[in-house]
Image: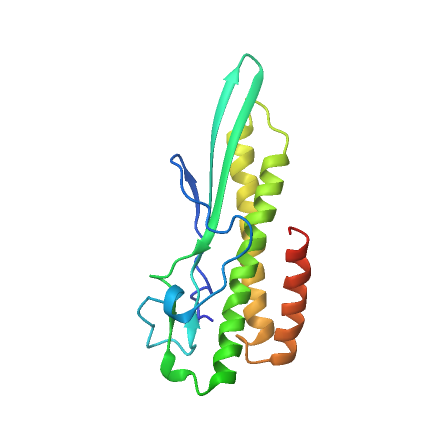
Length: 181
């Protein structure tokens, strides 16, 4: 959930030149309040939780004559120290399940970003003169699409309060994730 102008998640697109561990290689993580929400809650926020997600990519390029070889690495995950929950706002088990389910949707959207970003960036055609610019432009485009999706998700579900809209999003996200399993 988000507070005013603060986005519902934190999306970082870094061009990293060192290796890192992929956090969502096979399946997206399943959120747990005790493990993934260690940040200090924003007491000024009207919302009960915030899930901070990340997406990273890096590459190394080798050029030999006119031949270009690019090795990509992709990673995504949740940042527990930036994610938070106001436990005092959770009234009962049902509210707990609904809120955690809504926050899980943010992780699923981030997983779709990871998979789509990897597919699109890896399969794009590059030349020795355009690969840096093309990789960055494609990553920005894919990142923006999923950032906008995160916002639509919160808006349409009213941050998880509209159960009918939440159920529709749950079905949609499950369908989209099945394409990558």
